[in-house]
Image 1 (cartoon, protein in one colour):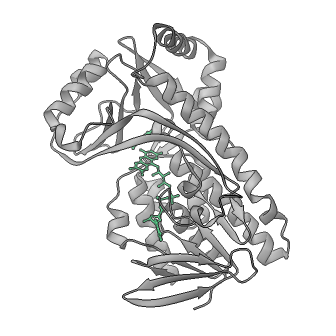
Image 2 (image 1 turned 90 degrees about the vertical axis):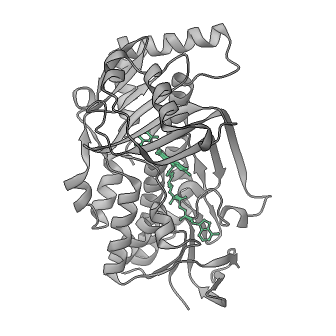
Image 3 (image 1 turned 30 degrees about the vertical axis):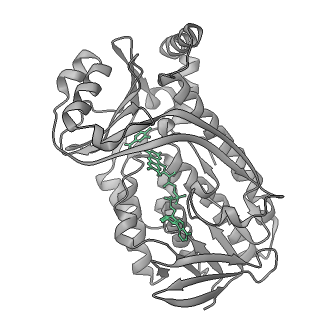
Length: 389
Ligand code: FAD
Ligand code: DHB
């Protein structure tokens, strides 16, 4: 089999890139390790930046997001027993859309099927070859048969545990990492959200977040220990703990229900550089991870795809390699700013097991500054809604 761009991974990065390329007449094949149902079963991000929404429109799959997604003009921060609203709309005239990653993935999969582009699900033992040459190839096994895909470029969109990043020689790849000493326990439940907007809570017992997927479905998170297991947390225990971390009004409005998804995610900051080696590009979680506090993971995957799509258009439509040469630098400049924001929000809102009295006083000062300074709120707002591409 031969294609122009071989895409590894059918997460949001791979599917979005595929859709944009297909719409501009650039042939591509996606190879995905899992089944389509498995990919759709993963519950992840919920906040969509304007830039990401524009990309989904450009890819022709934004209609359902606009009709079913919830436009949020601000968020609330809860600390010291009170809630403080930060209005993106008033501060910078912008907003975000709350719309689940699962739905985005479904819309992209449907768009791809309608366009007739090829996706090979359950592609096993994917390996990359000759990436330093002009004729790279990808080998894999499908339904027990060994296959080879020849291509011009490979887009490594296969997430943190994928093989693309590991195909770049150790002598070339540099990695930067911070692992946080806690995780997030999240549940999905068919109960109305406690508030119209997201509540990010800093409490001495730990961080909490009340998010949502629709006017009738809540997505709720609490900071937990890395030793905790999902089985340790009955729904009753979860609600009791969440209630203690919220202000009185939010706690009163919290309606317990039976969760239908419950999972623990560790928190990590990670960046691999460069994002290009020969004819291989890395995009999304394959190249970088952010702790979820700033809601940036999915949105960074989309901005990487923007730069990569532009680079490939330059190559195929204008015969120029400039975009390809600039890809890594352009994408990383934005990645590091989102890394900074996610690290900062994580540091400001969580309880760190090792923190001293000094650290906690600094955290309180940070929150108080954000509460009282319009300059600080503008900075928060422009980062939260997403820096320009
Ligand atoms: P992925 O979505 O990871 O997609 C990669 C794809 O590649 C997967 O489908 C995978 O099966 C496939 N793949 C892997 N290895 C191979 C291989 N060898 N061959 C072929 N295919 C392969 N972000 C937020 O903003 N908010 C959140 O609440 C949030 N929660 C998260 C919870 C979890 C458990 C995780 C893991 C991430 C979470 N994120 C969150 C981050 C966000 O979901 C990711 O940043 C986003 O999914 C990145 O998209 P991606 O396409 O780069 O990678
Ligand atoms: C959600 C997840 C986040 O990490 C975040 O910062 C905001 C919302 C969510 O899943 O809804």
